[in-house]
Length: 252
Image (cartoon, rainbow, N blue to C red; front, side, top):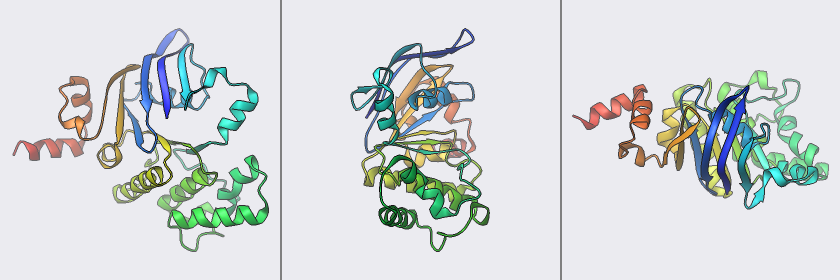
């Protein structure tokens, strides 16, 4: 579980995060949504320790991020997996070399142990006969699978995903969504996803945190969205084509 209490972050005197408090729950996919400029990327980067908030607390299962020393932060880093927006694979490396990278960087495992783990996670994300291929030989969806495999190879307690469906067609995006959700439940990971994709909200929104102008304006589940009378939420979600069609169908 990741707990956020009264988080504030500003840039150049402009307050971007304004007292955000929430819980990101273990074994669930926690989605951060909101319009551009709402603060969702700043929140994600604060959770990762890239930004240092001026006020508030971020704790990882009771461990306060701002109180950690260098060794404790390094230890936390080994417990985190990250799926970047553009996959961020190393072009010069093969699939298995990309996936093995975190193990070589953060562990003292033997080559045999690394190879066994790499083979396991590549198979877990349903990549067939791709071990020795370079990223340029893969489709966008396959590249995302490699990124997920790399993110989970070190058995993370926490998984962060930044726009994991960016650049993918809708069918492939749903497959990636479901894969992330399956892995989250299967390994009991605290997963936090920064997204603007309303399909993701409806597919895997175990918990949704909606930001508006740096404020936590609403939180709930994918089922709660249809019940809320929060105008900021309804204006946002029903602006998407998907939700327009759903609303039309509900209204007959």
